[in-house]
Length: 212
Image 1 (cartoon, rainbow, N blue to C red):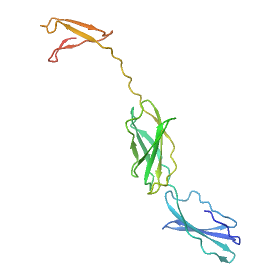
Image 2: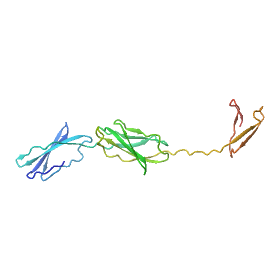
Image 3: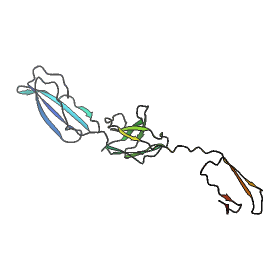
Image 4: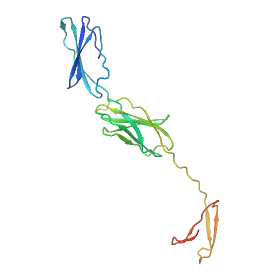
């Protein structure tokens, strides 16, 4: 809390608390012009405070009341699951009082994209458009008010790698001829470009194996 000092003040009385809730009163000795509050405020809460000067046996009126809202905390316990070649699921622990979340992610060392999700969400399924065998990172922050103008700090980055895709198998064109065709059961089978170790199975029109 900051204020302009009163030259004749011996001390100041600071009155503060959550709007609509309890309050505390603290005396700060002159010539102070601020009071720092550490680690006792609730995240995502609206506070108010005012101050008066104490000048010997007299005290001034209280100043005008000042209101402010603390940021909500960053989401914790990020995990990545259901990782495939082109998609994944992001999961995090809910932030109490959050009005929604913003996720930022992309390939490590590359560009990134943002996406917003609702207040009740604790997971997000990516589109099936991720690159296979690539290293990704993502982080998340919470929206702390209904206008989405106030956010928490970003979380720590979460890293994951998509699964590698199966490399395409090159297949040579195989030419096969049955001579004569049609026939009465006696025929000659000519196969070209089959390669070593190839297996040839011949079916008739009824799906029965006539040669293997």
